[in-house]
Amino acid sequence: MKQRMETPICDFVREYVEKDPLRLHMPGHKGFGETEAFDLTEVAGADSLYEAAGIIKKSEEYASQLFGAHTFYSTEGSSLCVRAMLALCKQTALQRGVKNPWILAGRNAHKSFLSGAMLLDLEVRWLWPTGADYLSCPVTEQDLEAALSSAEEKPVAVYLTNPDYLGNLPSLAPLANICHKHGVLLAVDNAHGAYLKFLTPSLHPIDQGADLCCDSAHKTLPVLTGGAYLHLAKRHRELASCAKEMLALFGSTSPSYLILQSLDRVNALLSENYREQLADFLALAEKTKCRLQKNGFVFTGQEPLKFTVKTKYYGYTGNEVADFLAKRGIVSEFADPDHLLLMLTPQIGKEGLARLEAALLSLPKREKIHSVPPKLSAPPVRMMPKEAFFAPKVSCPVEEAVGRVLSSVLLSCPPAVPVLVCGEEVTESALAVFRYYGVTRLWVVKES
Ligand SMILES: Cc1ncc(COP(=O)(O)O)c(C=O)c1O
Image 1: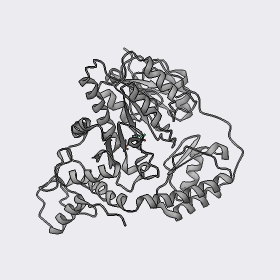
Image 2: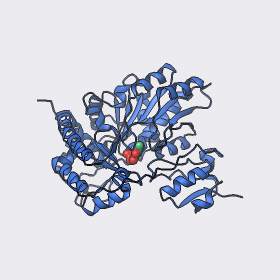
Image 3: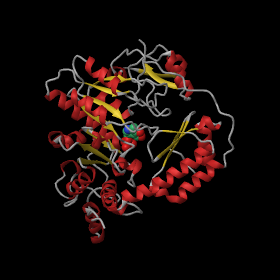
Image 4: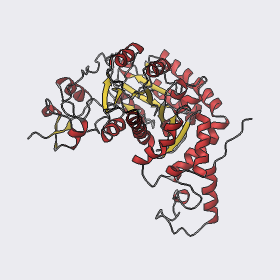
């Protein structure tokens, strides 16, 4: 029987609630309401997220033990951790005396990466995907080696999204080796892969050599929305000593204690029998997937907790299958013309899998749809992202945006990753992509 980790944050808050004090401190609900009682602020003994020295520090130490890293909590998702990772990269570059730090990033980066790099004035150069599907950005060892060895001044870091939104999960270890050979950090957006640590063997980025990494605990572990981790590899003590500063740079001064308790509570679960629970569930999920495959469903991606269905092989768009499931009370994570993305966790159990399987099998198979997404070619960069973002802007129909400069970082979903980045020219090739995904309007830089 494994030793269940303690939950210092949950214990403190529970005792506080039991004492039933008159709360003459924030938040304004004073503990009244269905979920409010356990929502606290930094009262004496509750510690402080960005200057943790008590119960939060203890809880983060437990998380660090679980992940084998220097692990820090975020109550503002991986979005906050991504920005903190970039700030740490920028600091590293400046401390190494680099005048113009830059980062080499897989093009399928989340918008928090774009906004973070923009706010930090960190130049980004892209690794473009070689295949047609730009939702994924498979980076081969050859591509990475070529990009790093040809760079006169090396980037401070390579930034990869792994797993990607579709559940592709290439091996990071060889890429980490290449980065380290060139003296470059590997930073990984593992927003979708907190649970990878608990596979046997672990497929977590930190275990594959990444230097910095973030996980949205809330995406794949039983944690409240917003709960996330910033991890730094054990060898990076100095970076770890600055992590809180960098999180605080972008984070709210009022972190959610509900989310902190959720992160704290999950330590206990993860330390106990989660690994076994996950393995049992994955065996069932794999069998479900095999039966669906036998009935004509085609999947992509290797991430075991994600079913990414390539629905056109079954004769439907992803959106049509998502609607079909929604009518049967099953709500998908994401759908676009080509994909249906279903995120599973052991929490849905055998029953959830059976319900999903029955619903999908009740969908009549049709003729395969042959259309594919338009190919996107790299657009000209006309302005620095920050310059374009803060320039006077107008919103216009996509057709009228061709030849103009994009002035937004928010554009992304669908597809799940940015088609264009702020400062890039809206090209005919991008127009075709926007049309395909039903994007009708864009913010562009106002022409004088
Ligand atoms: C790949 C990727 N990175 C980062 C994020 C941001 O994560 P969070 O929602 O936890 O802030 C997301 C969110 O969907 C994501 O898909």
